[in-house]
Length: 221
View: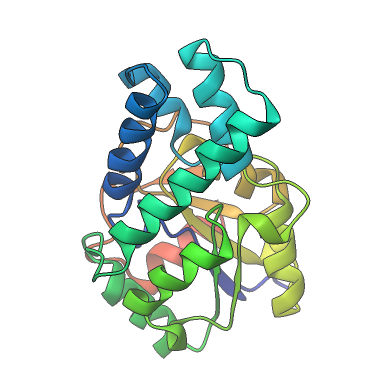
């Protein structure tokens, strides 16, 4: 029997929502709070990382001692600041809303799959609209966040499909690695930083004009 595309699994920050700029503001403010300054190299390494991994990358990059107390304080500040920034409408990435509608109209299953923790993801869903998704999986709901495949494996399981029957849509190297490791076909639409070319990854400059044919071609790559 020929394999059939069953579901589309969407990353959130940088893929559907232009929210990486909000995270950028928050982590740069955190670096100043910690008595240092963010470099572009550290900032790029943070894109797509899960909360705990991002803090470890930040502390190591800034040459700070990641004591449990310091990490707790940093996590608390970051969550409070990002919450403040995400409580209003969040800008969409170009073509994202139409792409979500395309998948819904086609009758394909759909999941939001993000490294962002649940409490913050809910603000994203306020902008996106929950009706576009059958399920959502967040970084704090699995043992390991991206670049590990756990969030993608969990989303496929909740949808009752195999990861190999899914197309994941990602914008970052971390997310693309996670989706590929789960066994998904991967459509990459870079946002803030380039994503290295790798076998099995299909690239687009934008979600504008995305078609079902594009998704099917990605699935069969």
